[in-house]
Image (cartoon, rainbow, N blue to C red; front, side, top):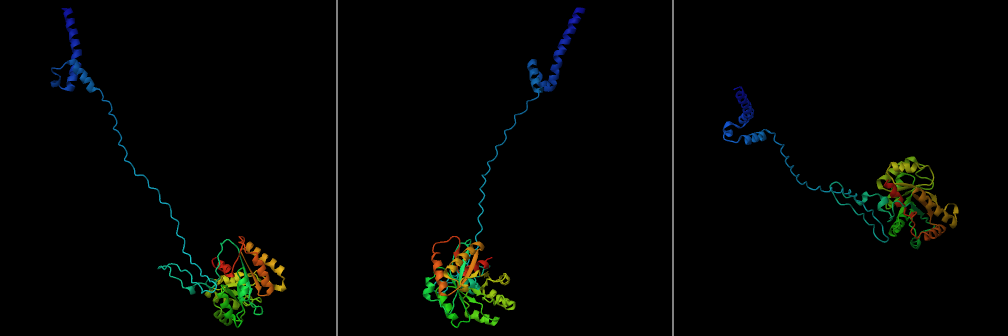
Length: 336
């Protein structure tokens, strides 16, 4: 009996060891599902269900939408250059050409010819690169040695004529020079403002005023101020004498008058032709050193012969300097 009891207990232990886990699985799956099923298969299914499920595969990242290609940036356009006024020119045996005017607009009214300075309106036509130094020759029209038309036509370099306003035929001479395409300046031969106004009325179509050898303007500060104020209104330029310390040019600048200074007088002290030729070369060299130079000569036969000889050597293009009418030098100071 004892042996059978031991066997019976052993069976009970064995059955409990088997049925216990099955009951646990039954609790998980439900009794109705468990009944009639194979116990071993159910255990395997329960174990698989109880096992942690593997992490789901990550969803494929959505493809990025295609971005539009960047448009190239527009290249910056250069600012339009300001419109330029073409200065009037004078041609031989022809009327004075009028300046080309800028287009009319609400903000920029069309200028009238009389609004332009005299140093521009009555100038001899001339063009040269701005970087080239300028050398000008003033030729004083001495009534004792008149400048004939044939002499003027024989000159191979541009000159600007100096007219004495006290001459009875000053107006006729100015008209003759302008008809030949040659500009002129007035010599400062007057004692007061009224005399200057009279000279300016007679010889208005000139580009400037040359101070006299005895310093009409330099020696009279009161008259100097009155004359410069009037020139500031008309737009005439000033050529100061070769002497002094620049006070006359500084006074002109304060009144808005374009001014330059005389370098030398070509035919002073009865200079010979070879000496005058050397002085012409020296004045041209001065222009290269300082940017501009002005020389004064008279209508003496010796002076004209020296100019003709020197001018013949200037026929070739010279890149070091340019022989120009004096208005070109005055216009440079006007633009500063």
